[in-house]
Each structure stands twice: as structure tokens, then as C-alpha cells.
Image 1: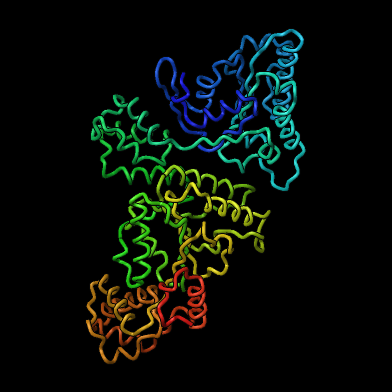
Image 2 (image 1 turned 90 degrees about the horizontal axis):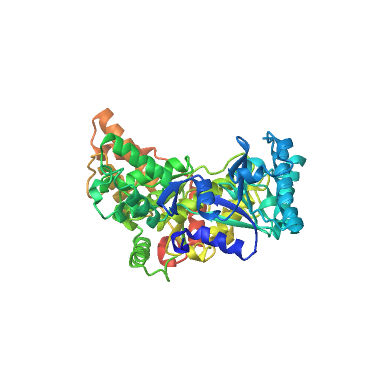
Length: 550
């Protein structure tokens, strides 16, 4: 079959094997999905093992697989395997990992020796499913059995008799970080990333199943590229499940529902590691900060025009607690019209789990195409170069390294825009804030005049259908606090509403009453400190009001 019909990852694998660069491959990423298999009988759908056996390994005589649940299984060439002199004495094959790997090694060496002694060539493949359960990442733990198995697997890629024999080995794992370091960090072992399906893959799948899901796909007629593009970022198996549910219910997948369907599918696949920020507002809803809004709108315009040369790789939004950093990102989401993904609790206590979670998140981001990644409380989430106090096994340092690498990947420019938010930007590693990772640093400040503070409170009171006087009442003017953040103004608006409802007073009277004993939710010394941090971080002084210039 022509290589153009094969996914890119498989053609890379073929080139590495045929050039004798390596015979051992770690397939990681989207390895539990369904795949389109171009066969002589036409396009079919199968799992990764099916794809390997039916498509890539057609010329191999014997294909064996091993996993903890099923033990050694013969996927192809059973009759040839029974010719092995040790076959009967090895029956039944042990399910125990070390014994199973030793049996496989014995057979591989038999095939290699048979070729040298008798000139008979048996092409053999071994597939290790869920290989991270066979040779897991142990961190600093000591387990001699696991270490021995990892060394044995390494030998399959280095032993001359095996490398000169037509033999291939596949280790299948979702995340590289789950696999033993001796296997992963080996020059003769190729890492092949299996990506989430591209729009063309989804479209082919829709076309292949158009009759089976006629009702679900009815709104699209022959234009199946529309749902394919909208569903990018979801696995093929998740999309298939959705189609089956809709077809069973007799309901069509309407165009207006595609975005919601995709979000629910992706969030389910990521098991709580991410969430999508709902773009239900725009920058028009963000009060003040006009120079900032103008700059961001210019960047968005370049993005939408496809002009990426001047597009930043990322933003840092900083400022005192309550100044609306998260709210600004929500407004930006609606303005940009692209998916905004918020990273949630990706840290885990188990060895390698945090890094594995990040791998899964990065795969999703690459599949989404254009998107914004929002990391709140970035000073806590981003890790540090030297680790942190209480850091177990150097996790913080590895998180830092993975984040730094991903944020500086030049191929992401114009595709992934990173937004970090923090009231303590001084605690974020300097290297993570440098140009090429974070190009624009946006400071947000509290309202610093009585007029602007009152205007903000008045706007927020409107949310609760309260009407404050347009002009600041004389008694209120002198009592307004010096610095008012959006968070503090929101809190005041809620308290005004409460007094209006419980005491039956006017909104003006309620606000005046509250200001009599008002105390800022953020102590003045903390506010001043965080303001100065925001000033120092600003990438453009036009973002900083004159009143905050030192």
C-alpha cells in the first residue's frame, strides 16, 4: 500500500526500521484509541495491535505479544512457533514478567541462531502491551527483578545476533514517564509519538461510517469536514461512542452542539486534568486598563489574520490579589474565539504520575490546534529549577523542565498561547518569564482614584440590579478607600445588596454605611508590595498608570 495512506508516525517508524537505525520502538501517546487501517479490502477500524499486525507487520512470520493479564499470546505464525524445539517444555507459557521475557529472549536467540546455522530466516516481532506495568518507572526505588527485565529488553536492541536478524520490538505505553529509565534513555530505542487523530482522520472515519450513523450525521450531508474539524482534540473511540449514543437515541449532532460535545469528550478523556474556560464575555466587559486591552486586541487581530511573526509565545498577567487576572483571561477567551484550556490539579503523589499527566495534557494541546493555555497561581504550579522544600524526588524540577521545554517550542508559535497568572511573579523562575516563553507581561492594578473606584463599584452593583447615583454623593466621596481592586469592589456590591434587602435602605445609603467601617481585604503593606512587583514586571511602561511610577 502507498505510504501516503499511512499516518506520519508509522512512516517514521518504517524508515527507522528499514534503514537499520533501530529495531526497538516505544509507542507512546494516543495508544489506546481506534485507528483507521488501509487494507486491501478497504478502510477498516482497529486498535493499535490490530494496526501493527494487519498493516505494518504483514511481512513478518511470527508476531508475539505479552502483557500481565494475558501472558504471552501468538498473534501470527502459531504453526511456525510450534517448530521451536523448546515449545512443548515451555507450555503453558508463564504469565510472570521475568519468566515471560526470558522465554521470549530464548525464542529470539533460537531464530537468530537458526538463520546463522541453517540459513532459515524467521521474521519475528514482539509487542509488549502496557509496558509500563512490566518495567515501570521506579524513581529511586530498588527492585532488582524490574531492573533485570529492563536490561534484558535493552539487549534486544543491542545484541548483534538480534540486530542483524529481521526482528522488531514494540513497547506500548501511554506516557514515557511511566516507563523504566533504562529502557527510555537508550540510544537504540526510538520514541514514536502516536498523536490524537487529525481532522482528515476524523473525516475519513465519518465517511466510512456515514451509513451506520446516518441520523447522527444527517445535518452535514456530504460536508463531513465540518464536524471533523470541530471534533479535533477528541479520540476516535470517544467520537465513535458519541455517534453510537446519538444514533441510538435517534438524535442528530447539531452544529451548534459540536463545541460542547468536544469539550465534554476531551475533559472526560483527561480525567479532571484540564477544563475549558467558557468564553461568555469579551474585553468590553473588563473595566479600565485601556492600554492593556488595546495591546491584547492587536495580538488577537494578528492571530486571526494568520500573521504569527509578531505573535507572543505567552503572557504573564500579574498584579495584587483581586485585580481580575482570571477575569481578564475569561474576557480574552471570548475575544479570541479559540479554546481556552485551564490546567487543574495535574500534580500527583505517585512516582512519575505528575510528569505523565503533563505528557497527556501536552498531547491534547497539540491536537487542539489554536488554543490558549491558562495556568493560574503559576508561582505554585510551574515548578522550580532547583526544586522546593518538601519536594519529593525532584518532581518540581522535572515539572519546571517540561514546562520550560514546551513553552519555548518554536513550532507552537501561533498555535498555543500560554497565559500565566500570579500575584507573586517574583516566585516564578526567571527563565520561564524570558522572551521566547513569555513575551508580554501585563500588570493589573487596583483603582487608584475615588472616581474610578466608585465607577467600578457602580458597574458591579448593576449586576445585582442596584442603582447607585451617577455622581458620587458628597458624603461618600471622602470615605472611598485609597485602592480598590475588582475583587474588593465585588465584595462591596454584594454587601450593598444585602443591606438593601435586609434593611430596606437605598443603594447609596447602604454603600455609605458600609464605608464607615470599611477595611480592605488585602493589608496595605501587602498591596503596596504586590503593586511594586507588577510595576517591575511590566514589559511596557504604557501599561503602568503614572500614579504607580516610582
